Amino acid sequence: MLVFHIFGVILWMGSLLVISSMMALLPDEVGAARERIIVIGRRLFHVSSNIGAIVTVIFGIFMVLLDPRVMLQGWMHAKIALVLVLLVFHVRLYWRVIALESDPGSATRREFTILHGIFSLLLLLILVLALVKPF
Image (spheres, helix red, strand yellow):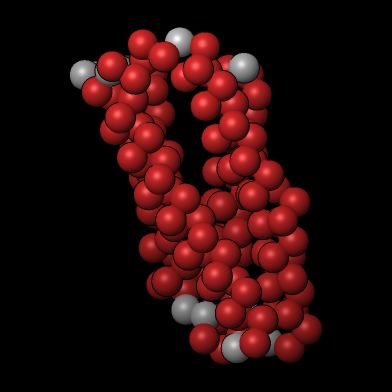
């Protein structure tokens, strides 16, 4: 269960970080290159990011069902809260990529760089909670 959970996390987070990095490059591109980046971002969502999120959540739930006592730990509540925040930003980035298909000129480097930083910070915080179990 743990292996599949970690695999899902790597697939999910890796995809979100790649997509946000690619979208940050979008303002510098024009024409067909800009369109291709948007199409690649959307495809990465469908092929990697969404699947990684589903695998992560499903196997995370399975692991909690195998040892429900973990829900008595404060760090697990904080981890689940951060995963929910991560899901909100996941959906935010997805909607943004979809919106770029109709208005590619609305992309800003700053917006996607901030999202990239948020994904990185959430990943770091979740890893600290899962590995250190501070409370």
